[in-house]
Length: 119
Image 1 (cartoon, rainbow, N blue to C red):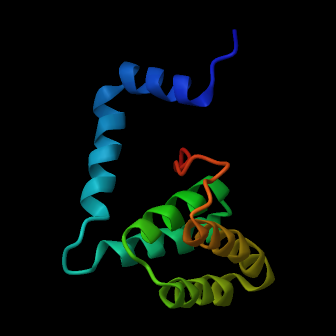
Image 2: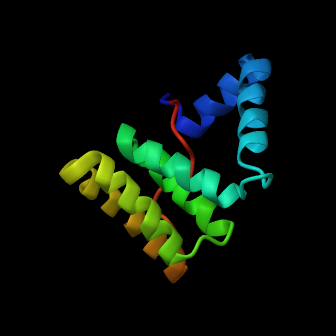
Image 3: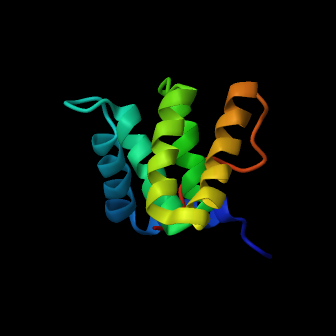
C-alpha cells in the first residue's frame, strides 16, 4: 500500500513532534505581524523560493501572502526583485508565482495544496 504525502507527513509529525512542531512554531513566529508586516515576510519567503526554484514553496508563500491581503502591485515589486537577482530563470519562476496569485484572485481552487516542501 502506497502512503500519500499527507499520510507520510502526519506520520512524521507523530514520530517527531518536537522537531516538526518546532518548525510550525518557528514559521508562526516568523511570519507574524511585528515591526515588519507578516505579508512582506511572506513575500520575502516567496523571493527566496523563486531563487531556490521550489514550486511548492512558491505556491505556499503566494497563497499565504494573498490571504494576508497582498496587493497585485506589492507582489509585482517583489517579483521584480526575484527577476533582477535571477535574470531569465527568475522570470520563468516568477511566472509561477504570478500564476498562483492570479488563481487566488480569481477564487479558483488550486490543483495543488498550498504546503511548503521540506526546505
